[in-house]
Amino acid sequence: MLQGMVGVKIGMTQLFDERGNVVPVTVVDIANWYVLQVKTIEKDGYSAVQLGLPRKRYRSKGFSGDWLQNKSVYFLHLKEMAVEASAAGAFSIGQKIDFNGFAMKAGDIVSVTAKSRGLGFQGVVKRWGFAGGPKTHGSKFHRRPGSLGNMRRQGEVLKGKRLPGRAGFRNFTIRGLTMVKMDEQTGCIFIKGGLPGKTATLVHIKVQGS
Image (cartoon, rainbow, N blue to C red):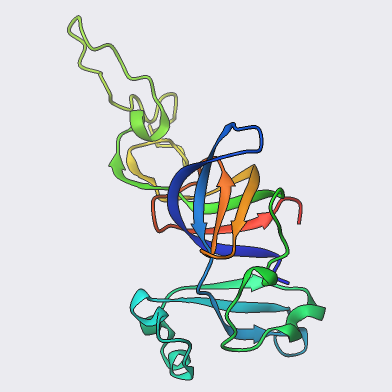
């Protein structure tokens, strides 16, 4: 079995538990992934499988060996997943991954890794949470970063100084999330709470502590 699962974020909705309480969940589509390559300890030095998600226009056609000749044309995402050495033989090229291929179930505590939303070029107030200066009484400081080389011999800027720049689009991992439901009919899983990234973001899910 795969030690984790990879999917595409669809969006958020809500479910009701057995007590009738509303549970906010994020929906992740984990269907339509195919095995493209199987790596073994004897040949590659480690055990893993490479998974590929076909582009939408090819998903209804079924897997074809021609896809392997030019993966960037036929596949939207490629992802390598670790597997136990004893389980690597259970996978074959062209195999479609179903729910039985994942070592997790509803109720598991999972951690999710994904890229956050990109915010473009931002100032220090939005990027780093700086308070900024006064807005009135003749102040011209406002949202500027302030002094950069204070108390330095030649005013050089220390490496790592928090300055304006591109914000967002970074890998974040959220731990302690609950796998609420796994729907085999739709190929979707439902995870309690919000996940990093916008719609169609690739997310990596694994059981916490594994």
